[in-house]
Image (cartoon, rainbow, N blue to C red; front, side, top):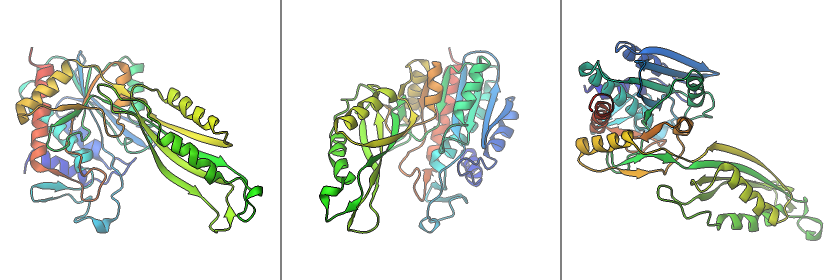
Length: 377
């Protein structure tokens, strides 16, 4: 069996629903230790993290990723046990196959092959792994990066194994991510009998104009690397359960994925101005998942693009779409970041899968990137 597939299957079989790691990091650490990596587990709260480094000199290249996965969903919808990996029709099935245990396996095997022929490489190589990417992302990569910075360890280049490919392996890489701002808005009214409209203030009626205003706002035109900011209502709840009572309040949840035209602070100010203009009585709880970031372009991006062309024969597109990633915690230190991983069509879905051949291709790209950054002049 192919080494990439074998390791990916071993990782998938370890049940690691966020924030659990399920022994994945220990498995990877054991293999890295045999290659001369210094292994440093970092546990914060309930979260397992791993920092493994080989070498002291700069530049420092880091493979980053997460061992936690989202819940499997209804087991009856899966064609096989999500935590008992299975190969069918040249695809590897299992929770985490694409997001992102397949990438982690490809990174490890690429490192093993690279070091078998280049143990005297320049610079240093490290792995940064967490079990807190699919969850709150508080005690994971953010805390590890904070620890590294406090002791003066600087990451020069970072490859994150998020599933970025769209139609075929290596056809897209991410060079940044949009910001994410969520809120729960409660608009208050006056409860009462529907037959006496003069004695009530219907918060549902009050909400409709402001929601229409927010929904129809053209927040920005986007930019060279970012699509326009989007507003999405994710939940609406109101009512007492009967049809003859006007409720006292309505609760609305919404999210904005925003471009680099905004910060979370300036976007929040804009929304508050809209709410105030409508004269509402309200309160609002805000949650910032991450600010937008665009990694600087340099040698890492050149290495990833050229390696992709050499291995796959096609040119990758540059993208910042999709959800957030842990790159938002690493980028502020000035690190050049590129995200590259499997096809993302089945991530977080039932019957998640990755093509067996794609894991081999991805590992070859990762190995070529290491050669370009740490060996070739």
